[in-house]
Length: 256
Ligand SMILES: NC(=O)c1ccc[n+]([C@@H]2O[C@H](COP(=O)([O-])OP(=O)(O)OC[C@H]3O[C@@H](n4cnc5c(N)ncnc54)[C@H](OP(=O)(O)O)[C@@H]3O)[C@@H](O)[C@H]2O)c1
Image (tube, rainbow, N blue to C red; front, side):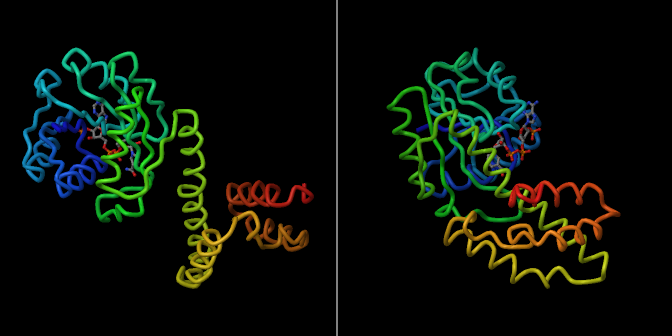
C-alpha cells in the first residue's frame, strides 16, 4: 500500500511514525511549508514535496492531516492530481462528506486522542473512529487501524460530530476546570498538588461507573448557602462565577 500524508503537524508525525513502525511505511509527505514536509520525510525516509502536482500518481491511501479549516481547500487543490486513491481526513469535527465533491473514494480516519509533540501516544488505548463511502474501504481502514492500534469503531458523520462535542466536554472543558482550580489555589499560595488525589479519584470513579451517578458536591446536595458563599468568593472573577453558576444549575436544576 502506497501511503501519502498531506500535512506535517502533530497527527502527521505521530501517525507517520506509527505506520512505519508497523510495516506500513509512508511513501511521501506533502505539506504547505516545505521545511515541515522535509523534516518529517527525513524521519520517515519518504519522498517529500510542497506541490500538489507532485503527488505520487500511484498512491493507494492519502491521509489529509491538515487543520480542520484547511481540509476543503487542500482537497480542492489535490483533486485534479488524484485518481484512484482512497482519501481520508483525520478530523473529529469535520464530516467525511466534505470530501465527496473531490474524490470518489473518501472517508475518515480519526484517532480519538489529544496528541502533542512531546508525548508518545499509547496506541493500544486510542480508539480509531473510521468511516468511508465504500464498504471495502471501511474494511481496509478498520484493518489498518487494528494494525496500528487496538480499538476500532465505525462511526458515521452524524455520530462523529456529536462524539467530538462530547470529547470537548470530557477533555478540553474538564482541563479548563483543572486550570481554573490551579489559578484559584495559586491566588492563595497553595500548591496545585493538593488537588491531585481528588482529581485522580474523580477520574477513577467516572471510569468505573457513570459520572452522572458519581456526582457529589454542594450543588448536588442542595447546599444553597455553600453555593452562595462560593459565588461570593468568586466575585473578583465574574467569568469563573458564571461557569460555577451554569455548572451548578446543570448539576441540580432545583438551585435555579
Ligand atoms: N492534535 C490532535 O490532538 C488531533 C487529534 C485527533 C485529530 N486531529 C485532527 O488532525 C488534523 C491535523 O491536526 P494537527 O494537530 O496535526 O494539526 P497541527 O499540528 O496544527 O498541524 C496542522 C497542519 O495543517 C497544515 N495547514 C494548516 N493550514 C493550512 C492551509 N491553509 N493549507 C494547507 N495546509 C495547512 C500545516 O501545514 P504546514 O506545517 O506545512 O504549514 C500543518 O502541517 C486536524 O484535522 C485535527 O482535527 C488532531
